[in-house]
Image: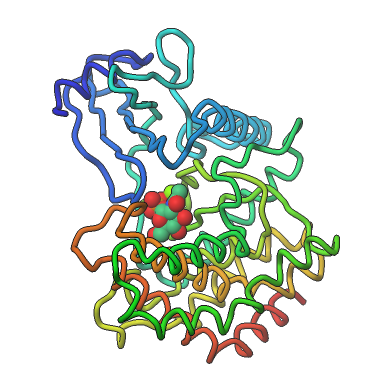
Length: 365
Ligand code: GN1
Ligand code: MG
C-alpha cells in the first residue's frame, strides 16, 4: 500500500478541507496509524487507522464501544464547561455513508479520528507528569462509572483475565511451535511458581468480592497526550475499553510509566521500578478514584502492578514460543528480549512490594 491508496481511503470519510498528505504515525504493536494532513491550515488534521481485525474480531462492536464511551465523556466535559473539548476526548469521524468504519477491497477495516494538535506523548515520564496521568486515568474511570446501557463489549474476550492468559501460555508451551522452548524452560518454571498468586483477582471476583468496572485496559504511559505545559489533554487508544478490575489499569501504567528502562531493554540493569513515579501516579489516581473504590480494590492496587507485569511477561513469552504471531517484532528475538525485560521488572517489584503497599495505604488515608 502507498500514500495514494491511504489518501483514497481517507477521502471516504467526512473530513474537512483537502487531503494534502498521509504518512505513517506512531509505534503501536497492533494497529497501523497514519497522519492525514489537510489544507487549508484551518482545517483539522486526522488520524487514519487500519484496525487489526485479526485481533479485534468484532470491529462494529469495537467502534460502537468507542462511540458510546467518547460520547459519554464529551457530554460530561461539555456540561462541566470545559473548553476545547475536541482536544480533550477522542472523536471518531464517520464515513460519508454515516458508518463508523470502512472496508477496502482486501477486507481491511479503516477508521478516522480527529487529530489532536500540539500534543506530546512520552515513553518516560517525570513524577509531575505521572501525577497528571493518574488524575486522568482516575477521572476516566470515574466518568465512565455511569455509562448508560449495557457494559461495553469485550473487544478481546478475556483480555486481562490471568487464568485465561495462563491457559493460552500452557498451550504454547505444550505446542512449542517455534522450537524455542528448551532454552527457556527456566522461565516456564518462574511463570508457574507465581501462577496461583496471580489468579487471585479472578478468584475474588467469583467470590463476589471484587467488582468489574469500565477499564481502559491499555493504560500505557504513551496512551496519555499532554500539552506543552505538562497538563493532560486526552486519554487515547480506546480499542480495549471494556469491563475489568481497576487494579489492572493501575498496574499497566506502573508497568510502563514507572519502569526506569524500556519495555524491551536489552540491558537488564536499566530496569527497575521507580518509586517516585509509583508514588506520584498513586497520588493522582487516588485523588480521583477514592470516591468510588472499595477497600478491596484499594488494597490490591500494588498487587496490580505486579500482576500486569507478570501478565505481560506471560503474553510476550507465549508469543515467542508461538513464533511471533501476535506482536509486531523489530528483530528476530524481540519477544524473548521483551519477556526477559518484563520479568526483570517483575522481580524488582517483588522486592519493593511492601514499600508499594505502604505508599498506597498512606496515600489512600
Ligand atoms: C499492545 O499496540 P499497543 O502498544 O497499544 C497490547 C497491550 C500490551 C502492549 C504491550 C490489543 O498495545 O495489551 O500491553 O501492546 N494491545 C493489545 O506493549 O493486545
Ligand atoms: Mg493498544
